[in-house]
Image 1 (cartoon, helix red, strand yellow):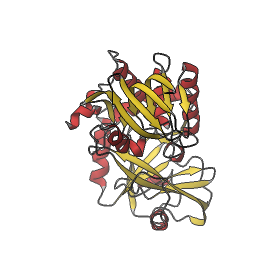
Image 2: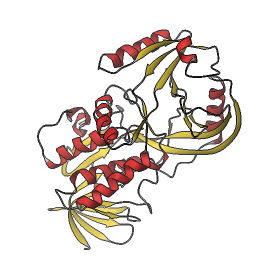
Image 3: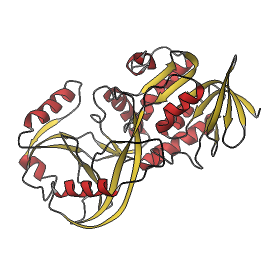
Image 4: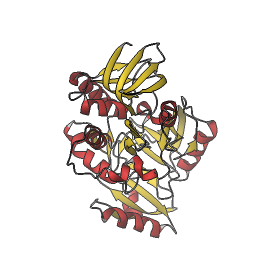
Length: 361
């Protein structure tokens, strides 16, 4: 046996790093990561925006509560967002505005003239939009590195190239076998393994949460005219695309969600082609070339809410997974909530019950 820890966190992406930073000073913590560097999969492939409406009403409290922390760290930059509607979709856009205005978000109705002032070359189909001035870009790498540094400062260990290969339940918790040949004992295992969350649970003999990974594609396009830094994040109410500027280029997604096994996701040619076709239906810009493309996995529980809390059948196994495409924008509040539940702290502004694994019992 190499060492004993109070808590071993499986996964060093944004979830694992943020939780290690939150609890590292109060317990003996180790983070184990299968890849050679933290954040290789989803964390390193984010489209990098913070939008209070993204993820739906159940996620919104976590996003909103994370905003002040991200602003204080200097990791947000103003972007703004427009969710577009075609003729015939006015009621959907109005319902979107009503839904998020009811929880205190600033969301405005824009007619065609309002959209045109912010999106040049707009094709005639698009006649209305919901405008969110609070939307920002996130420095994803900066946030991840901040949490890794805070976790290290708090005393948490990090072992890379050390994936979970096996686990044995003991009277004192767990004996874990790692892919680098080491073995480690832990009182509690935290499952922050992202797309691999259900396989980790299966390895531990814990009931799975039916967390499904879905592939999401991003393409970087050179366009003419060059994309202005003032361009907002542009989405559509039917969730078939989104794009944003990046150093004169465009980052574009077809908003795809293709079920996938846990893997090193790669973009499919058809998904990139669909994205470019949909982009051409929004603006009349000339596409110079496809410069880069990539894909990541977004993992969802069946109800599309994250899963934070102890497994009902095993008080030594803690879920911190199912964070879809919103794990980065909710990281500060999610880590605080999970740390509170994990360490048995009272209080907190956000009720953990909606995110508990017990909701699936």
